[in-house]
Length: 64
Length: 550
Image (cartoon, rainbow over all chains, first blue to last red; front, side):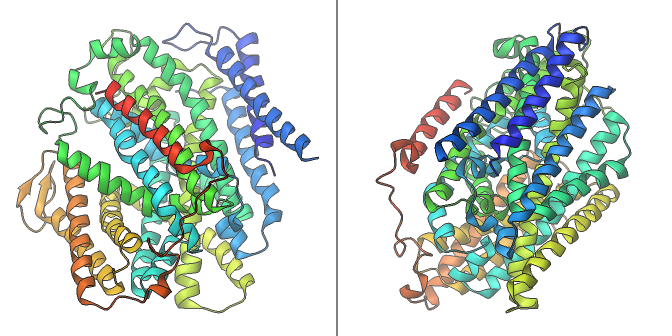
């Protein structure tokens, strides 16, 4: 099993949930910050997850 | 702190992935070696991250933020002075013997190099230590979830233990290691935003420097006298105690971490495991310590954030991290942070359980209870021991609820077990004249010296049961000095006894000792895959960090 696949999917899903929160519930804020924390963190996690999946995909292609 | 539905969704999503990884890996297990040592087949980037994740339990995560608030940037010495030099030493100098000896565990190496009694001594003390450590980690998590979220102590302890048991039982060490990597990534992504938000709210590093006492924001400047710095430690105790004995003792001889490197798929990968691990390890203080320092700075800014207090009145440093999460994370990200906390607990506990089952199965059961059985039998024993390890840890967690100085006991056991053991390894690996009786005498008297030092000195009202010969300015200083004394005793006694006992013939020690072992040279490898250039790069970065935060 290539660990990058499950980790990649995990961060993609996590990123999508947070992005969804950031876009559809932008007023969910914490006390000490005015930033849309969910939006930015979600975007970073989505990119990270896609990066892991891309690396895993490249590895399987070069093996064939 | 209140959780929303989305936070629970994230928590459940994470549990599903953790269990899914264990389920997928269950098919790869056909021998006790697959289950207990991963059959030496794990890729190097995975072993490197697991190497540091196994050490990043809930106690460490909460404790490092707490220490950041209590001691300031000096806490980073645990990383930049202690762990990283030790990890470099381990990868470059010690790994060739561990991996090359084909030992399956640290105690087994001791058996090969010295004899049965040294192995037994280490195997038993290590088994007790891992159970205590994993129980206390469980206790700390249960207590925190009860305090912060109002969850039942029993349910959080049992549920998280059940999940750890499920995936280690299914996929053995490989499953523990793979999950440790996912856990590490989640801890970083879950807590890095908190560090960024809290530090920038406190005005960045310069803003924190302006708001806090100068001895909280300088790692080296106030080290001249123990009265000037918050840790109450002087330069020598810090460098010799923490930087040398305790850190090298932990990172170079504790099977919990060494096991991860031993699971690598080649000698070269095993040596690079701790070396590559130093790079993320170097960054960790920014994620785990900085929030603690920022919490203290924020509490002085009239933002409505007050530093958490204990019921008895004093500051409750252990709550620094969770109170910051409540202030900076909205529903959603709060779930990620909380899941990260659970993940750290699981990686710490799984690390202890997988080290415990290997040492028990190979070094206690196969050596003393039933040798010579077919491998299938040891696979079953490994599985049963995994269950037993989890149950014993739960027992230790409940013991901790009754005796709240169990945490101090753990600190003591770490110092007592690891410090003299490091002298044994240093001599065993680099001095072929060291004998079995020398090592055993050093190890036992070193351990005795540690216990004697603790029971005859006092720090912050602790210790001194037998006599009161000396008072240390802080418990930290006492810990460091116990380690220094235990190490020195073990070293000196081992050398003295070795000189008057007969050494083993060189032929028997090939692959076990420096000078009789071919250290592999990776001449064909690219420069960044060779240990030496990697280590030099790390040292340069380390010096820069220490100068920056001096």
